[in-house]
Amino acid sequence: MQTTNKTIVICGAGIAGIATAYYLTKLNNKLNIILIDKNQPLSFTTSKSGENFRDFWPQKCMREFASHSIRLMEDLKDDYGHDTFKMSFSGYNFVSHDKEKPIFSINSNEHSEEYFEEITDTTTILNKHAYLSKSVEKIISIKNAGNIDVYAMGSLMLKESKKIGVKQLQGEVVAIEKKESKFLLILASKKTISADQVVIATGPFINNIANMLGFQFPIENTLQRKFIIPDPKNIIPRDMPFTIYADAQHLNWSEEERTFFASEEKYKNLLDEFPGGLHIKPEGEGIKLGWAFNRHTEIPKWETSQADFFPQVVLKGASRFIPRLIEYENDVPTPLIQYAGYYTRTKENWPLIGPTKIPDVFVIGALAGYGTMSACAAGQLCAKYVLNETELPDYADYFHPMKYQNPAIVKEIKEIKSDGQL
Ligand SMILES: Cc1cc2nc3c(=O)[nH]c(=O)nc-3n(C[C@H](O)[C@H](O)[C@H](O)COP(=O)(O)OP(=O)(O)OC[C@H]3O[C@@H](n4cnc5c(N)ncnc54)[C@H](O)[C@@H]3O)c2cc1C
Image (cartoon, rainbow, N blue to C red; front, side, top):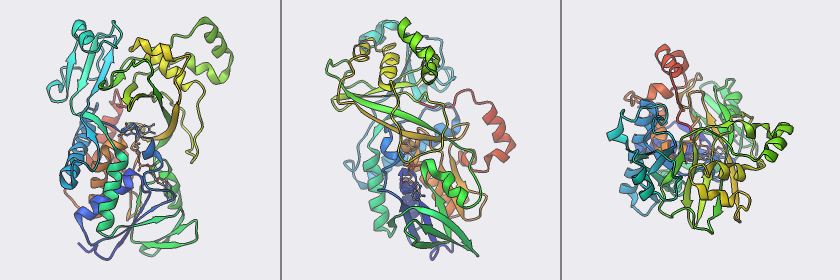
């Protein structure tokens, strides 16, 4: 393979760009790789991650992708030491008030042994999880799931890549010119960089780079939020697994609140049905809560806004399955740390990884709410494409940027009942 003297420029040093650089060096340690970011590495979407991982997904391609990524994360720990980053298999519990309700539209008898354990005996549920509502009828516990320290993992991969010669640059790519077989990347500082191959890894901004080359990816960005609060009343046990409410719900507002929200255009949506997926976990001495219910797509911005009532909405929704959380709804414990980042996603919620319609331009993106858990597998797959490797995993076709031209894959996309978003 004649890649030795080629220069590969990776735009974006979030977890996706860093993982790509790392796996490129693993596959070939003689490459010239430049990793460029406008900001500090891992500081944009990646820093907003809830840092949860799981191998259970509605579709096989996603299950295999996430499973492989979890194995690669474990390999990193084996290779560089178990203290290099925190990874704990603390589990995921999906809870429901309806024992007949499938999680992610999948019947519990499918894959059960491999991926999860189901509990429908209410006495067992309450004995094991006294903090849950007495009317919870089902828990599905995903076995291969937990949380990771993505900043430490990304920093490790960056450090190891730099040892093999990856150069890290701070700068904003503002234009790209094609000069015969080379690309000329122009930075805001007016500095230019010549590249043979370009990897687009700019998270919510992948279309800004694609625009510079005259095309667009079929993605959308929705702003999603999380917050952390102290837990002065010790409502959440410190060893509670990441717990997700699977049921959709209408929030239980008072008559007065209902009338007020109905009269204000910007609050009317608080009266709508909210989707399942509200999630809670213990975080240090406090609690971290999130609910990716926002479906409003927007052009991404570097600075994100606060949302009125988000903590109250989530606490009210959460009290449906952990009743005592209602005690915090109108008296939210402080300090309250709120943050927001974009889920950059395709309609079907599968990523875009591989060659684009422009020769020698690749993408790793649309990693929505699962980019932390899948970064290693995504980076490895992107690296294989850049190096023109032909042995690719079965899931590769499902994530290929040209997948929408493949009738078999389009048919599978049309049949999707749940996209697995949390
Ligand atoms: C609230 C929230 C919770 C989440 N929770 C989880 C979770 O629990 N588990 C999980 O697996 N995933 C989770 N995710 C998803 C995960 O965080 C993302 O999928 C992942 O971080 C995306 O990484 P990235 O490298 O593609 O993007 P980013 O981290 O955004 O990196 C892109 C980089 O490109 C740079 N850049 C952009 N434009 C330019 C330019 N023109 N020139 C130079 N640099 C540029 C940016 O500065 C940025 O550093 C969550 C996401 C959010 C928002």
